[in-house]
Length: 209
Image 1: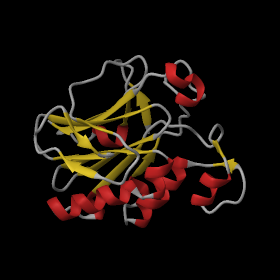
Image 2: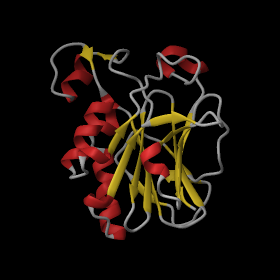
Image 3: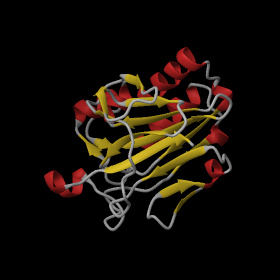
């Protein structure tokens, strides 16, 4: 279950039980923590931070297992996803717009966690944060076709990513979705669709204490 804490950051109660874990989905009213990021390019590229700080190249997912270091992604309608391997204490922050969703960025991040750290899907919890909802995400025929739809339609990016995580063998009971639309949530969220070039960005972060 998602809730907003005193710092105006959304958190997941099911993840709060892990005392070693730091996580949060930022809002337009929350302070941004010091975290490693990347130049997001709507790709399926994953980078392992390994304790490094700053901007770590061009990619759309960051992995980390170094205590005391956060990784983060920035969004303003795209879907932020936080992955947690509670067995090996490995985390990932994922940025999934429509292109990243089509290229299965969340699954690619899971694969990278498995290759580098031995992560098992059975040990993973996944939190899908606030992003543009199906209610507001109307796309044209070319984008719709990437999701197997014909003609202009509304796309549910959260559900598409939830399905992909389930296909990667993450237990559905361990996939948590905020169900919060950034375009609708004027007081809480930045939205590029709503505010165009005036839109700011929210920071979704995760790390090991």
